[in-house]
Structures are given as C-alpha cells and as structure tokens.
Image (tube, rainbow, N blue to C red; front, top):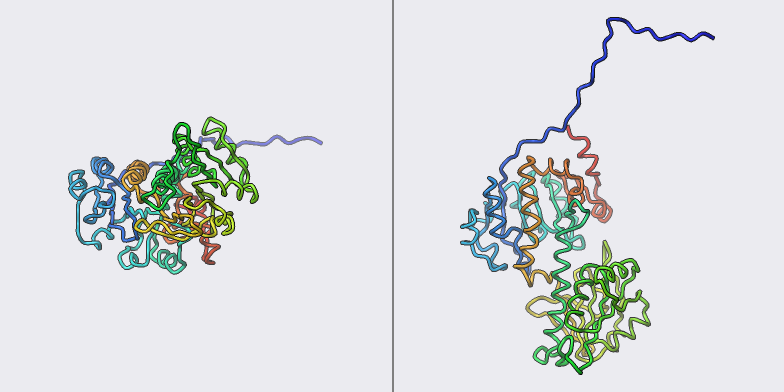
Length: 404
C-alpha cells in the first residue's frame, strides 16, 4: 500500500502565534475606612499609625472614625499626624470602598454597608448567622477573613500571631490568679530553689499550646502536654528543641495529671464547629482547691465541661473550689501588641492591592490569598458556611478563571 505524502500549497505560510501575556493593571489609589468597633471588649485596631503613614505615602487615603483606636491606646492625633482623616460620622467611614475591621460584620453594620464594598475583618465561623450572610450576599460584598489570610509559605500569619499572644498571655494570667490577692493558692508560678515547681497541664499542642509550654518552661514550671494528634506532639517537641512530657488524650492518664496540677490550660480545637469536651466535671471536682483552669477554646464552647463564658471585667468563676478563666478573645486584652501584629500583615497586603489595581487582581496573581475570601462580589465561596446554612456555594477558582 503506497503512502501519499501531504501536499502543502506554495501560498500557505506558517507564522508564530502571538503570546498572550497577562498585563498587570495600573496601580490605583485606595480609600480605606476604619470604623470604631462596637463589639464587646474589642480593643484592637487593624492598622496602627505607622502603617497608615506608609499607605498615605503610597498615595492611598485612610478615613478613620474618631476614637476608633482608643482601646489600643492610640489617639486621634497619632493617626492625624500619620496622614489619616479623622471623622466623627460613622456613616462617612462606611462609605469607603474598603473597610478594615477587627470584629466581624454584625447586623448593626448592615444599614451602613455599601453595594460592592470590600470588607477585611475576622469571620468567627461559630458566630456566623445565615440572615447576615444573605444580606451581605445581596449587597454584592467581597469579604476577606483575617484569620484565613495565607502567605506565600502557606502559613496563616495573623492566626499564628494571635495564637502566640494567647499562648504567652496564658501563663501571665495563670501567675496572676495563683496569687493570694486573686483567690488563688498563693503559689508563685514556676517556683524557686528548694521548692517543688508548679505543675502545669496543657491540653492542645498547636501554636497556643506551644507558646504556653515555652513560657511555662521558661518560668521553671513542670509541664505536661496532651493532644489527640501525635504529629502535633512531635512537632511541638521539635519546635521547642527539647524533650517535654507528652501524651495522647487518654482519659485515665489525663485525670491523674489534673489531680495534682495547679494550672490547666485548654487549647484543643476542631477546625470547624465546637471544641471537643475532654475534661469532665468529675475530673474538675478532683482537682486541687485553688488551682486554675484557663480555657482558651471557650469561644468554641470550651474543652472543660465546667467552663463558662466570662469577660475581661469579671474573668473568673469558681466551681468545685477551682478557678475558671473563660474570657474569649484574649489578644484583645493585649490590644496594642495584637494591633501591631495584625497591621504588620494588612499594611503590605493593602499596598500590594493598590499597586496591582485592586483585590481582584491580587487574588488572580496570588492564589494563596484565595482561601481568605469567603464572599466574592456577593458569591459565597466558603464551603463550610454553604453547607451549614444550605446557601449556594461558588468555587472562587472558577470565578477567577472565567474572568474576561
């Protein structure tokens, strides 16, 4: 069978196809609003004066409600000198295309929110309400959750910073409430030469547990760490660079250690939903009188059965002669440090948003930021919220890929 060679007409010519380049958008100035938070005991601020100064120097404008940063001990004058415009009217701030908040949007914000606005704030999945989410969707809001902002190394910088603050603060709080002046046993956390060290039990080996362990060890305490994940315990050992007593969550072992400890820290959480209860009321009743429980998982229900939600003004309740500290949002009690940590992440991000022509451009260029978006122009892009409330889910990657 003879093969027929293909014939190419002399008039036919080959040309290279034009390469389609992704042309970056021109930078554009941003108008950023910082309202005063009304959430209970929320003292943090999303941008500190130094960050505002950098944004203004890059051609952006910051509109700030008067006294918005008083909880972080910054004055209006500090922000005015940094280049921000200070206004008394809340409504004027909420007209800015970009809002930076340190508390999630609430129903009281809805009348002030604008169509197609961008909100950068925490999400707090356990406190999300369906009606609020539906109204945000109706206003075509784009929303970026602070705790879900991911960097190029696949880390969550704000979530980690808040965990570091919480973990470090836990031992300061424990030391305060072990003293005679706060109904404690009169024990110095850590102990001194010739006196047995204070016994600390930490449940949870993530960032909070790690920093609580670091500080307890630095004070000279005897620390025992529990977790339901062996790899987290191994990572804790590696990060500390030393051996520390660890155990998986076995109820009999945990109960035995709680009986003789002075401080118990609950830092065990699930990725979604309620924190697991791993310490029963019976275990708490067997603890030493005057010992203290600090349940940092209280914002997700707590991992001690006897824990109750308290606040910074009345942080302690006593059950079975054991002090219980159940204040959520511990970083807000160290608001200036927390504000600096948040601002360290948001300021460079906002500069990039301006340089690249908007949030839509930056999430096109930097895929790692997409995980933080839970609303995109009114489309719900968070699978957990969609499943929880039965709302329509839209894959953000498909939205981005289909852009013209």
